[in-house]
Length: 495
Image (cartoon, rainbow, N blue to C red; front, side):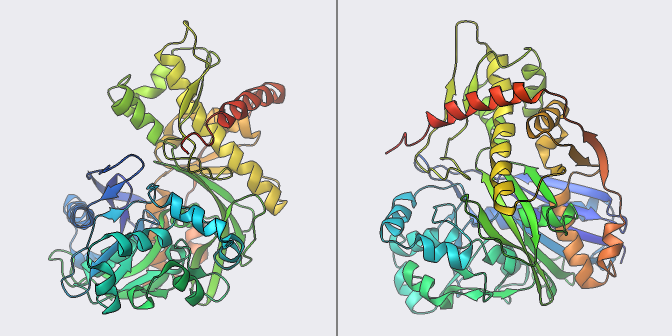
């Protein structure tokens, strides 16, 4: 069985990648799905469309490579995290649309929890801050606002899952209700220290424990696919949230190693090994992965709008027709012309955590043009990552030696060079930037015996290019000071 199949279920598309024993991609299929915006600040997905699109691309990836299910050693699943789905165990149907991680509808509820003094308890037990980002408040909202939900929950008929759990349920015909420790740690009611659901926090959110999946290691044979012709019989053997999977795919398995993924959002994680480091800078302590009885942790900072700012230039502002045009447009001007773009469309993530911040383009003059706005949009991604890195280094007292990067925007050479300049350290881009899917493949392959040990994974090719910093620090400091001024003007806008 010479292949591993990764299911990479993201925020805007479902993808499937087939990897060989050298960690090379043999085929890839991708399908976008509908983004639903019922009200300002609300973001939803259709759970059935998520599952259907993911299954379709899995079948397509096998067909492209002329591969049969018997040629696939295992499936690894990686997924958009925190996105919340609640379904009826009896019918197998979701009782509402999925509430996406970006959704802000529960911000007021989260403010109530803070006002009631629950923040320290939640941070101590879960490593998370109280925020609408996580699954806990989303489940509470569904139970309160979907007609009949409370009654069904009381009867034990409702099941909750993040996207990994939903896919596993679908692939096994409802036989398996499981998540892994990395996804569990993103709910706001998983106790990092006991490795179990926390009863006191479940009571706080009003969530019956009958709704919850069992929590398993990230690398384990959970089941075989049994309800999808064309995939039946393949073992499902790895699960990790997308950012933890990318950390594993980048081989950041030693404390201090750090990666940033440039996707719809940006997610910077630093491995802290078997130590759960408590943040004093409003970062998140999260499970990175669990293999056997060994749990590895990471510190994480999240940028809500990273690559999505380019989508907005395309779809919202209309100054580019395709996302790939942004680099040329930004390169049409020598600098940002004093323009700063803070893309706080759904609030600000770490280290600010302001759900009421809103986006702003600041510094416009009569001489400003589309090139300046495009350049400021790309630069905003770099500045937000640098803000996160400052906070991580303060928490861990570990100097950053290099940043390993992946995700779609990491292919942009000028963006990566600017990131190296602003951070003042090399930025290392791997030869294969599909590290999220690769991490899921590694976890599944280890469980299935496809790779016999961690060393076999570590020996696979990694770096493609290293960007060295070359901008004077005085210039960097001036740019970041202006950025900080721009950020301050976006905070608390929606009250």
